[in-house]
Length: 99
Image (cartoon, rainbow, N blue to C red; front, side, top):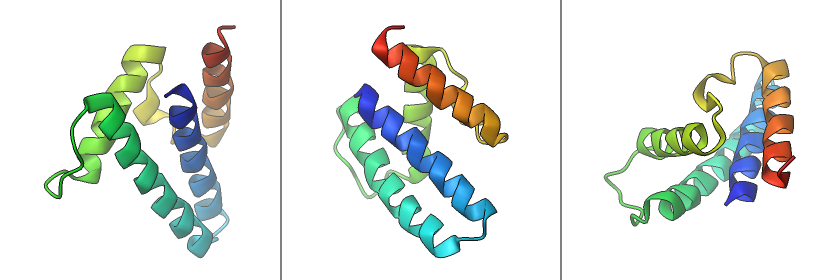
């Protein structure tokens, strides 16, 4: 599960970089992969089946709360500054490794 969370955060980071570089097609491809991964993580965390009534917001809130509870990081707010996002990814990798 830790690796899935890390992969999701890295996808979001890459998407943000592409958007800032105006590489919108690449950012859209990354976004599509991100949405697939969010659904998978949501299912693992909640145990709920993926349902057409659930929205991306539900998936994101569930994952945000999981990251805050498990790692103690304010995950929803890290996208404002990409340097902070890189630091967050580094810290998360260290926590996953138990360092």
